[in-house]
Figure (cartoon, rainbow, N blue to C red):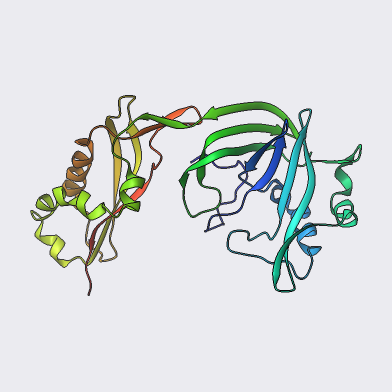
Length: 274
């Protein structure tokens, strides 16, 4: 997945998006530009209301609301969720707090995000892919902004859609069809008696290369087993061949690139009870 240029990988669960308006259109901003400046971030955190509700989908406890004025990235407001009379209510931080935290960045009555340089990814429409980590997700329509000192210097819009329909890892996993998918590989596993000593074995599939027709051309297979047994190279190669016999794979265009939605996935070959 494309991620924001600033590092947010510490989030181990899906996070709520900021909001940005461009030419009257509402977009989800998959990131938290305020986090890019640690001084700003901690100054803002210190002034959040005591009754602010933090949740697993918003570890920061706040949501930024943005807009573009010309090519300038503007922070319009910051909202938090508070508990009032046993009800969750979203409120905007008082102007006095905003002026204190962002006083260096006020210009013409706006807060210009000149502290931020990097890439921002925006989404609209149906969510077509999701992982339970930070903003690892994709939408039908995405917009990539390149920002330099708060000014947008490049703006690209992409329509994400299926190019070739076929086998899809995500669909297989969510439909509970993984075991059925592996049935054709069980006979090959039976050729290796050493597997009888293993309780748990996963293959990690990554760096999948699929051509424009949906043909898998290459992939890397990593052996993952806590049992300590040495990887069986022949078995890994056999599983790679098993994958390459599948045709076609579902192929998407995601932000201008042809690829499967899932580029790294784990396959539970063995999960025996002790």
